[in-house]
Structure formats: structure tokens, C-alpha cells
Length: 206
Image 1 (spheres, helix red, strand yellow):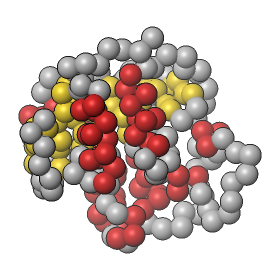
Image 2: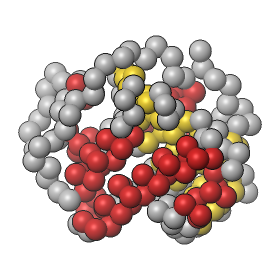
Image 3: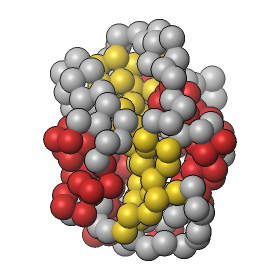
């Protein structure tokens, strides 16, 4: 059964990016209490509270997470930036910090946006369900390996429940969104934050 979210506090990490801004708009339409955490503020909205800081810094994150029920993690460097060190810092170290800080302050749900690239090796995928596909063994860029590591960080706890487009990690209450990069990701992310029912236990591909 979907959880009632009207008035509940959520934080969109990377909320000043393209996906993050559109997600904020949809959350506001649904009467969530929305905050954004990002490196810099790139737009104004009187219905959003902004926090600026480094997602790798626990002390920067903590004030933004106070009283938050659900976190949407959309932050990532642009895939075409080709900056291996930055990819690792944000996607791996940053995500690890977000997860541990969320657990520390008692956040109930974390929705993580991933990437279709984690299962793509340059060949078309036919008749495949993405949650059944193994991770790419020969990633096409520096970005993808860090997104694979990011997913693995989110599902490290031993008891994993997974269903189509989502992975729910029981000990940490983490939800992993679809790997789709389209705006459809927003609808999927919202549905995960609202409803964790009908989750089938299975193994995630390694």
C-alpha cells in the first residue's frame, strides 16, 4: 500500500541539475515539502529550501537531512566530462557518504538514480530485462565503472529484495531507481518513494 506523502520532507541531492529540477517540480505538485542539496543554486523557487555544499562532506549534508523522510540522489558529473577522478569522488565516495549519513540521521528511504550504461557494452539489448542483465565487463567510458560501484554500494547489505526496476535493501531502507535516463525516471522514482510493496526476493546479477 502506498505511503501518504503529503507534507513529508524530502531532499533532492543534485536538485539543480536537469533531472533534479524536473523531479522537484513533480514533488511540489504532489505537495511534498521539498529541499535541494547541490554545489550551487541555479534557479529560484519559493517552495524549495536550498542547501549548498559538498556531498562528500558529512557535515555539509547533515543539516539538509534533518527531519527528511526520503532522499532522491540525482547528483553525478556529466558522463562526457571524461574526468575519472571526479566520477569516482562523486559517484562512489559521495554515494557512500550519503548512504552512511542517511543511516546515521534516520532517513527512511533513499532513491538512487543509476544509468543504463551499467549493463551496456555497445551492442543492442533485445528481449532483455535490465534487472536480469549482468554488469558490463567492458565499460565504454570512465563514468560507467563508477555507476556500477555506486549500485553495488546501495545493495551491499546481505538481505536484498528486488523487483523490476528497483532494488530494496532491507537493513538500510534503500531503493534503487530504474537505469533509464529519460524523464520517465522521475515517475519511477516517485513510485518507489511511495510504495515498496510486492517486492520479490532474488539475487542481483554480479
